Length: 157
Length: 94
Length: 107
Image 1 (cartoon, chains in turn orange, blue, purple):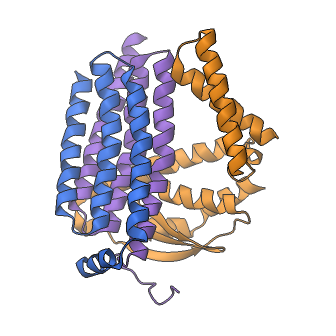
Image 2: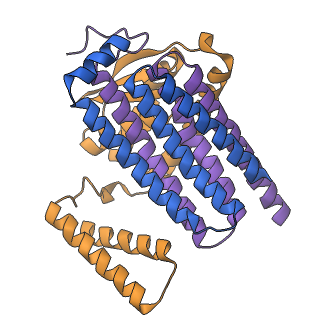
Image 3: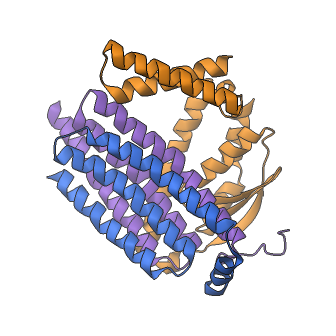
């Protein structure tokens, strides 16, 4: 139930932000559309804790995002440096890395964080490991050190 | 002024993406290039909307971002489970 | 104060344009598909963030601000998803990355 309410609130705010007209007629159109989409998602049975992970929204999430933004800046600078210094500076490599997350959503967050930081891409995901392609050996070693893995696992609890 | 510079940079990068799309050599390089072109188009629309002083264009950019993503996923679905002929060609090129 | 915001906005936009150009250059210069993907990743994260941030500072308070935020959110969510889908289907399509040393491990 709380997932349905959250989907409705999300759709309603989406309408309000994008429409920009706050007249009764258009607002009622928005209400009808939001209710219709909520009904459709219910019929498709896609609204649950997995597609709408409300339980992850706690105080740990902002601090993880902040850390991730820091990582993004660092790895962006690294990749840009390698672009400008040419082919000699890159050492592409791949590896299966272990995962410590217990839930699917945790694994997806980890794999997505790997892909979001430039220089490393998660190419395949299994129950207890992830296949990573890295632009340089240093990037892969950083990931192997397990800081990001630990932080995402911490997010789950 | 700065906005014009950014728009020019975007157009140059779009030209680079098109060059990569033509050079290939694999089908995935081309899809990557088209995806890159699409994200740059979104940004270009946003920047142009401020150059022209009409923020309404942002809606177009928003919709373009969604269409771009969905089209890339659809094309990938097609090539991932498409005909074996395509896969053979990719294997040979790589 | 307005001068400071204009300055910050210009700085963000120029830095973003530089990053975008670097990403495009990387896509042209790098030797194989998987390395090019990393270069494209630069333009999809930091460069988009900086340019949208610059436009947000430029636009000031209002509805366009939220629309720019939504654009940023969409690009940040769809970017890694598309990258992952591309990498995975390239791998399934039989493309081998340079320096792939775990071939025997795969099943």
